Image 1 (spheres, helix red, strand yellow):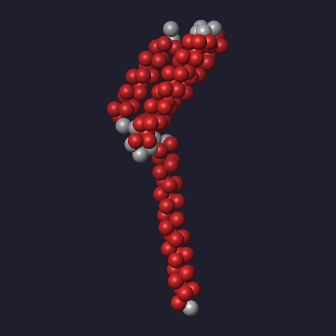
Image 2: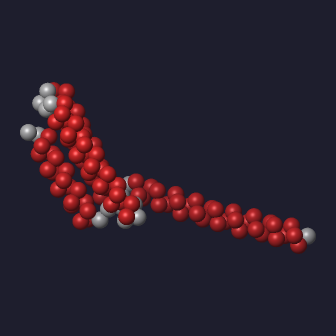
Image 3: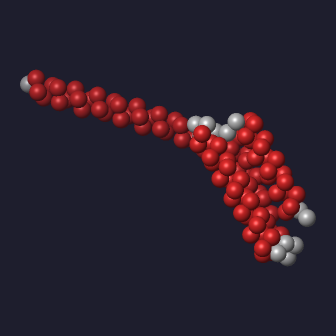
Length: 112
């Protein structure tokens, strides 16, 4: 009986540990994805991507110009993700400002 009691206790302890780890993971994921500063930066990138496609379709920019602008978007998005990885899933206000400045520069290029 002592063996089965230990086995039962081990199963319970492992189960509680796994449940705690799962809830911690679930608690982090929605916060990381919905962090306001990341959301704002990513919405701007999506909007600029849409503007690039629309200007390309309307003939306002060339294919090579659109390609260059998309590459700049991709670079900014990569920087945002790298910043978030180093900060536990979010970006700081200073990082957001730096990304916004880059997006502003690109936005002016799109509107030319």
